[in-house]
Length: 67
Image 1 (cartoon, one colour):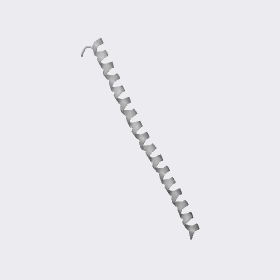
Image 2 (cartoon, one colour; image 1 turned 135 degrees about the horizontal axis):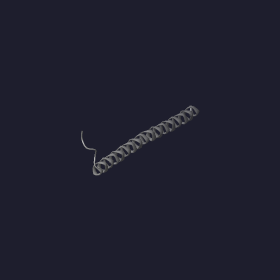
Image 3 (tube, one colour; image 1 turned 90 degrees about the vertical axis):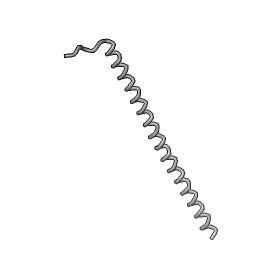
Image 4 (cartoon, helix red, strand yellow; image 1 turned 45 degrees about the horizontal axis):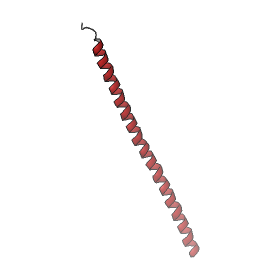
């Protein structure tokens, strides 16, 4: 049977666990930011499409009125 970890080994293990948690948290935050940007772009594109559709409809009404 091996000896239990020393206090220094416990400290190193704790520091490694903390570093891993920080890295995971940073990766999670990065992923969430990327997903948010994608969602914002989708909403922005939908707004632009809606605006273009509205302008096209207005233009068609103007053309119909001219005829």
